[in-house]
Amino acid sequence: MKKFFKYLGITIAALLSVWLIINIIFNVLYWDWWKFNEAADRGDIETMNDMLKEGYNPKYITQSDSYYHTNHFEAALINAPNPNEVIEFFLNKGIDIDAPLYNGDTALQISIYIKKPQIAEFLIKKGARLDVISNGMTVTDLAVTTNQPEIITKIPPDKIVIGKKNRNNYDIKWTDTETGEEGSGVFNGDVGY
Image 1: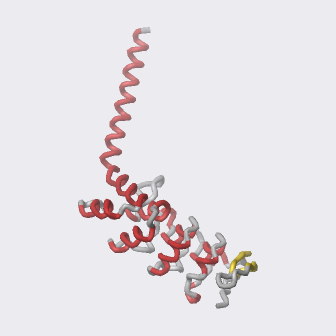
Image 2: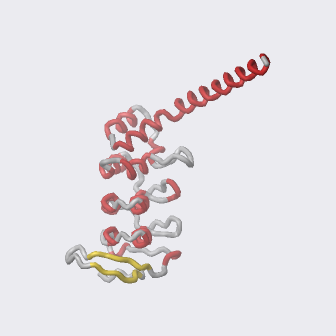
């Protein structure tokens, strides 16, 4: 029985040592990434700016470190209380507004997925491409299929693009922003401005 407890103690000590080593490696490799991501989450531009000045690698602003982690651009889009300011900060640092983020979607497409039209409008004004296709869908497709006509109205009529995969008709509902009248119908890619 003493041998059992001896080996049990050795096993527990070995497992704790492995856990400790993994945590040390993670903190050494990812501490800056984590700190920057938290700053993007909070919209803390000052901390992000300081980290970039100290040599933080800006490639992680649009590049995920693994399959499980979002990048800093997405963290700002989803959680920051001041996403437009953070996006402006990233753009001023030379980050491509149309960089493919997680799953190949752009920041504009993600802002539509998460139903944040004020961010989508800001990105459109900043020159985000409207013809990018991800998962067979363009920005227009996403706005239509997620029932966000307010985004469609922000897209210049000559820039509305329907993806080849989605040239079918969409049933949508809308509210006229000037009259307040509600309506519904089939959107077939014809805007009719």
